[in-house]
Length: 276
Image (cartoon, rainbow, N blue to C red; front, side, top):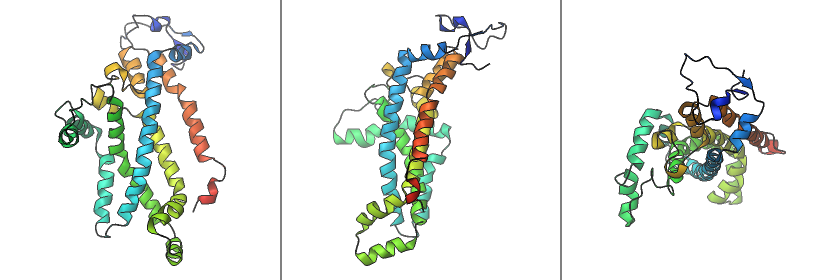
């Protein structure tokens, strides 16, 4: 019996049943779509969905262009230095979550964090409490995502650029096409399928990111729930309130949207025209 369809009648009361109390024999009843109705009327769900959408748009809008330009710069670098740069690209994404948690806390923590000491204070601005100020909590999560995944996306794009036929660059050189014009009018369309894959990857990661938000906010949404994401709301609903049925409903509520977006991106008309 799926959790999102069968719930205890007391799950929506003020005293939910402890799911880890094995002495109580739970009695379930079929409630149809009541879980989804309750979730859609929950203000925290709306807040988490709004924050997740903002987080996703901001992350993708920064990582994709930055990763594309970074891949081009590494491709133009000295051949002997390219392996070193490539290793540096992959390092943030390969770092274990436990290590990332410590690094993020050192970077964002309070007035004495590295971000304040290296960037904010030297320019004469007041230090920012990135994990407590509701105006900057979501921005801190975006910076965290950008730091972690820009190198990975740049690595994907770099591999696609290296796989392009040499005839394109030779023809552009004969026609006198400039480097940056060749990049945006020839290279960009030819690696567009890789960028679409990167967008799908970041989209799924944004809706399922838990370790980053947990390391900064400790499983909560922060001040005024400014950093409450969908996956954090699912965790708090399931393990904080003991409402596993509502948590399952929250998780499944975004599945159709993600499937639709991925379907449109993968099966869009004319996508084969630019494949190589």
